[in-house]
Amino acid sequence: MLQIIDRYEQLERPGWNWRLLWPWRQRVREEPVELAERRFFYQPLCFRWRGMVYRIARIEAVWEQLARRNQAARRYFAVRCNNNQHYTLFQDLDLGTWYLVRSVE
Image 1 (tube, rainbow, N blue to C red):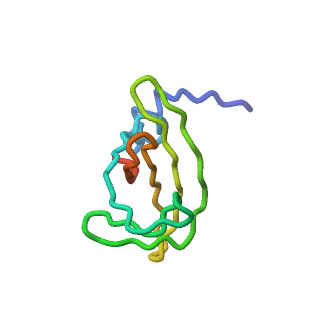
Image 2 (cartoon, one colour):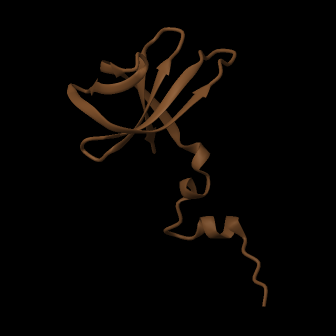
């Protein structure tokens, strides 16, 4: 038997979080970080964020975002630090500044 589920009806139920159904509504905060060390002149090796130093154990992914109308080109790094936490860093390629990307609910 086929059951039709009305998503809007599910949203009205207590305990349903609409943010889980629409993840693109999450806000993203970009916080500046200081790059303490580099590897191969462009890969981050160690960074300082909120007064603490984080050493990068592994770079898991690298990708670039082309420049847009009001945003400079960026190079993103998905990294894992020695404390086994995952972070996403990016470099503003026009200014050379570094930022940490955080998801905020």
